Length: 419
Image (cartoon, rainbow, N blue to C red; front, side, top):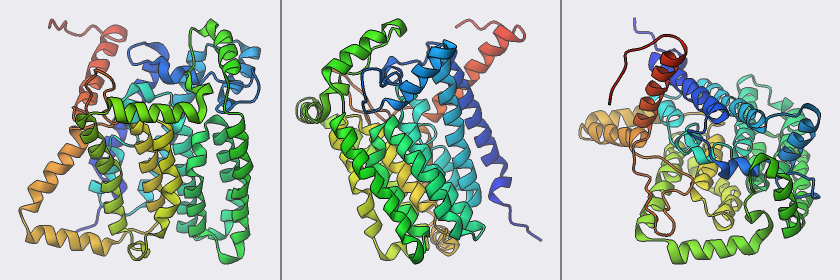
């Protein structure tokens, strides 16, 4: 008798997870010990601290500064191993969440191999050290807690997790990077899906972020702090971005200059396709397959509106799309998967054979022939960039080359290859 194979027993999926584990490990160590995929762009921002007074994004840098006063650490090691751990943690949450879902393996592969999620910081090494990963981990953790409580039928314990873990983590994240504030309402949305009517008073905990928002707006940074911090960071040979003291005026000016002077038709096509592949595709897929009455209402979309402010205040739309898409699927993943709709789709495909090659081509394109970079394909002044480039193929080749060189240099002499 045929026995249904569970998701976590699929050899292919497990091999993919192992491949991703290797990729994360290799890239993590390359950022620590090599300059091959290292960028000062995001690395420099990690040093922002409170030595020049309270300032947005300063908590992580202050933690390093205080620890460094005691242990005299190499910042490359400190931040390198921290972000290696954070990437492993992000990978772990994806693995645990998807393992608990009753998806077919194709949907699972589309998530874990998408250029938008786990592999975003791999495909574009310039964003590896971005503090966005704290924001992504917080929503994945929130989703994992809710999903676990629902499976164990212990939803009544959620208020305790909200007080002890979720709210404190969100406050800490906000002090690490104010981007967290743009996604607070999505955390509120997740809380609404599991809190009982008698526990709705716990939602008042989210009021804490109103004074925090005002505080970070007032202390957004100034020229004096910018100059002082750059001066004390000379010993590390880094310089933080001028946007630290520019505030809203620089953001608006940058938005105007980018979109009305340097933005070309090619850039527009890249952005449209990026939005389609990162937002529209997962939205359409999950909204259809979730069976918890999502199809009857789109009210939940209102909670995502504040996150679109990122597109006005920051010009790197690729990272904005990645953040938004991670929160979008994290919300969907707490709901039940409708197996009946899945069977219905399978039946439609069998009845229309021409759909098979079309779906196969799309899956191949989605996994191998595009990638989401920091700017969603925007080239800037007198530069050419595109999202339509080899992605997973390139990483497989890089991993093979890295493995060959590592074995040749550290274990045994391999045959010489002359190119």
